[in-house]
Length: 427
Image (cartoon, rainbow, N blue to C red; front, top):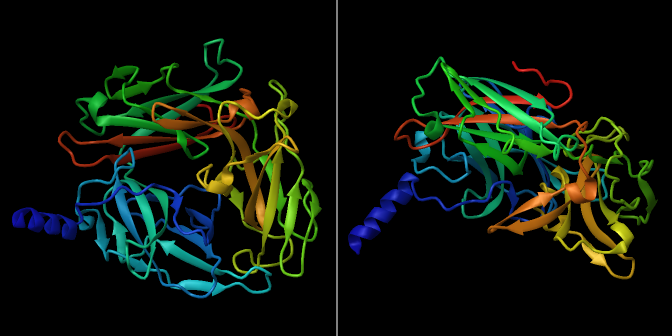
């Protein structure tokens, strides 16, 4: 028994024992408006190129106000976001945690909060291996007091990837889906067993909940792998995201029908949303489910912008609730449906779905989805309330993972981002 206890203490001290932490999750309800992106670009996914000078930017608000001691650290994960069985210092150079020292208490705004900001990775805490990483933010240097986690990607660009978005050949999906084809050039590496060593993941609009994972190449040629299977490389195209302009709480946006404000708070009501018609389609520029915090009131959006209770209403066909599952608001504003407030409640009296979100001033994109459970998991089905049209503009991100024979973790060796309308050619 003493031997087992000593072994457990040794592994824990070395960083090998690590409980599974859910990616992109908020553990403290006081935390709002988390934005983790490329530095200077609020619509860019947090991607760090190994051994580069890239910077990422983290912003979040604490509605408890006051000042707290927040720290962050990183956790390397495999392609499936399971923690790797490695010592922390095998993939991080520097300290095990860094304090977030940049903060400012809100001013002017009715709502009191403290805004925190950090540029990372810090030179004293640098990733040394490529792969999937979790950014973990916690209180008072105590990793058990987890506040939230966010995904980030560290890439070592050793493979060349081309991608293309086309219409599927299958008549069942021809008018409603996007087909993604991927080509990987492997001349710079000796990959003997691509079926076991290479894994391709494809994300639509940076959503992990409906990502596709492919391991079997359709064609294997000299120095080239092609993935073009129409059965498992298609996505429902959806439609352009709905929008919500909250840049000002005085000059109301076009979709706000009324307000109910007090001397200390804002409360806004969004125009009722309806299901979309199957083939009806209008193109307009959207942000594919993301949002930006900004104002037209000449205020600093980080610590001068205010918060409001935003009331959403969705009216199902003939006022009958969906039998397939819960209706959710999906987008970055609800952590792609992960936040509990994303679930809409059916009101029998009004025969409509309702929910309330607390949102900061800015411009938001969102959609509706039905949460359907199967095989011990779930999927977010946007096709029922939103419908699908091939012409829809979407962003796709292709991730290529590689594992050495007998290797201990999945390396991320290529990332390719394409757009279904503006970048369909192979490169």
